[in-house]
Length: 456
Image (tube, rainbow, N blue to C red; front, side, top):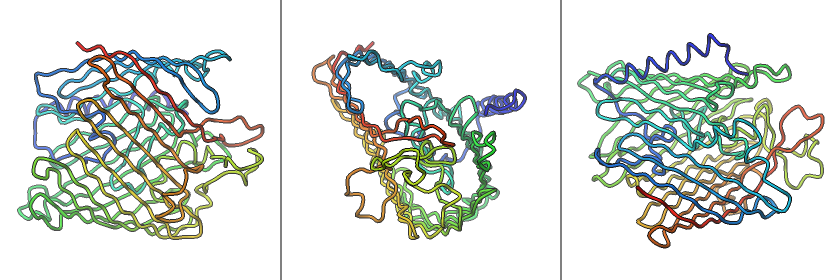
């Protein structure tokens, strides 16, 4: 449900005020390196101040979606500067049965041509802002929003926005799944009340609060509105060289559902011998009934109060017993142990692995993997999310109904000739008569392309 006109005016007025305020110099604390795509090596490149990079890819190849082959054409424009970048991407497919409908069946598809447009922090601008499909969003410690993605159902992806700005004593984060402000959105405020203290532990103290809501649930009489709030405390307990140990405690609550307590510690190194950034986490969550940590996650677009994922082995997609995963009102609670490792070699290589081991009645463990490699002739980006796991070793089992995968690889064959390949494990909506929620089935993609890259 879109926001009323007055509310939209207030939201955009706050954003413009943030842009204006962030343009002035001042003492600033570092932003979180795991907030959204702010540190995504596939997008964020720190070019020299005088450098620009521009290229246009024109490619064609076969397309396999589900069980049907088609021919496909792809065009991608990318413009990069020291602190700003833009990528537009368009594709069209056709086969013996005509064109592929989801390529252009609604006006919103024109907005989906924007892969991303972003502004990065600079010495004169303490602001990060990005418009595009959200791919890897975590809000604060991730107690409510963790690995949130709008790409899970690729043909129905939304173009959203995320932003950060701050000063020495405060920082503000915000995101919306859809720029029309009608779906999931949230914000976070961090306060540094003792930023000027001599003690490092006191000066690093962070008091923060977050809120998240799904506005799509507000106009549904059969669904309780989904709203959640969260508060957390963090400080630096120890430092050794480039490494800091930062314990944290977080409390989260859904206003009409359940609540949870999360505590743990992050081992951070923002700049290890000028080579890499390191992040390691170990945390525990105790959740009550009707609470799930990281509920706004990778599968939220296809597994929420408004959507259900259908088992591919079921005999009838209209039967509620055929869906996988648990809705929030049926969550039984339990204990979750989080382990996470992220290595980022400054724009060249990233390895990010996160696993949530759930101890409870149902198999609700999750795994998230991000891998990126940028070499002279090769670009490789892998994203995989898996849910409904029973334990650590279940990650070695075949992909199931709670799986999302994106693999994009490009290789320079000749100076101007590149080959590009995309593989996706995504979801498509299926029509079900009488169903009160949207139903989604697994959909598989494979598209190899070849063509020219024009640079200027």
